[in-house]
Length: 250
Image 1 (cartoon, rainbow, N blue to C red):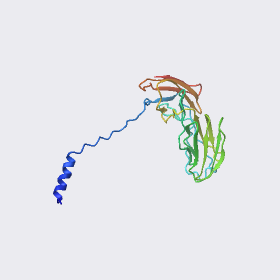
Image 2: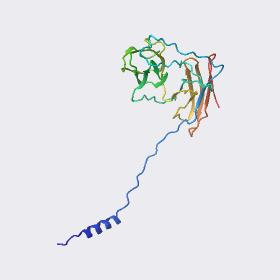
Image 3: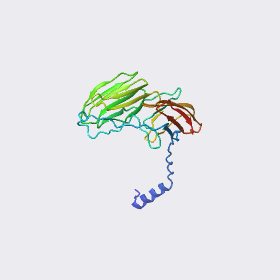
Image 4: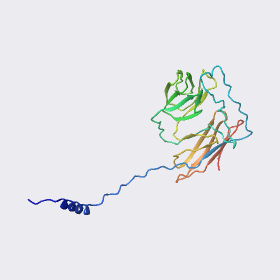
């Protein structure tokens, strides 16, 4: 019987290693999408109006903590940009997909947060109460089922919204509380920021109509064209308190 020494084992392992084929390199899969990279802007046209603070009832605000008294129904920045403008772009023939998880509309220090929220049709909305006191969630829809329920401290109510709609939401206990819930028939939407700018991603090539809505300033429209390579000129829209705004491409 042949003796197998440690040296022969090491030598054999080295020989096997020398003739081992190199491993195939790891190959990754690159995915991506064409984005609307440019930013649009919504500006106020005319003399900037005075917006007074909200009237907070001291007796009713007990337990609310420090309440933000800013009236969010018309917020115009130093550069004329309008906040909380709803921007939607509907794509013909596109399937609208609702998010898998509920979208949260919270109540904090006796204010709805956010003031304006957009969801696609079929979305489940969670009306959450992060305050230590009770609230009443009272919705005013045009097409969906209305909701008028007490939501206790730390509790929530859930509602699925199946129809395109524009819904104002109030709290009957705290009358200064209100927000807007927009149910859109599209997955391409945005709410303008404090400086009036917005960005919408994933628009396909072609000509589309962008629609703008603001709770105080009404409606406006603009036509946008997305090139085959995904580029599109920025859109600047002007809105005013006197007349319906109009959109133009820069």
